[in-house]
Image 1: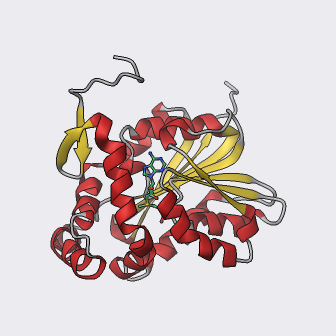
Image 2: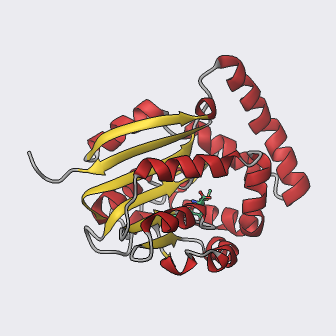
Image 3: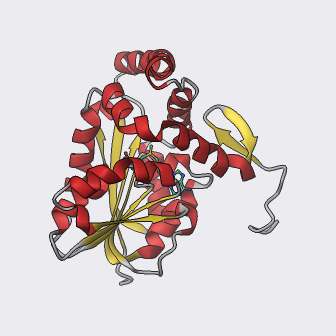
Length: 258
Ligand SMILES: C[S@@+](CC[C@H](N)C(=O)[O-])C[C@H]1O[C@@H](n2cnc3c(N)ncnc32)[C@H](O)[C@@H]1O
């Protein structure tokens, strides 16, 4: 079955729902259209603001330098892009790359208002087919986005392709707490309270059911490390944040030397 003519019978997951694979991009687009203008506010509320701290740690772990070119895949409203833009200085630049126009539009006022905002440019496109040539960027990062792709491995492969040799990779993604009692508490919070708060405040309960469900279906940190290594990333390491609610993986594209 060719890519242009996908198998109509093939299925995938949207949270715990099983849907035709060819429809997933559309489901994800609708999901983020619904929540775009409430996304930042809801994130801050549901994580009690901790997501900003996670993003700062993740960008710090990349060790970005002045003048570097960075791509923020699934960049959404741009928190990671703005942090990276501060680190790359005036001679550097950040491409915020996202499939969803509404998400980028919702975050754009913040980027325009930021001192480093002129270093960030927005490009709309699919992370499974990044619209840049091979070896364009010094660093490629993705925050809370890879889980939403129909084939997340394709997204990683594309990030690997657009990285220069020796370039830095970073993935910040939700996972599950390691301490059993905290995990039970988190399960209750994410499966019961989160959809309730989502429905009450953002008027979109289903969107906040999708979030915990999609997190449970995503590979855990060790498995993800192995997947990244098998894709050709080197020196892959990860750090759990807040007992494992979020995890940062960093690595490098090999320089081609044996
Ligand atoms: C949960 S948001 C994360 C936004 C931002 N990175 C952050 O950390 O706040 C996920 C983003 O992934 C984007 N996305 C989903 N599927 C995509 C795809 N196939 N290609 C590019 N972006 C995609 C969505 O539009 C959304 O903006």
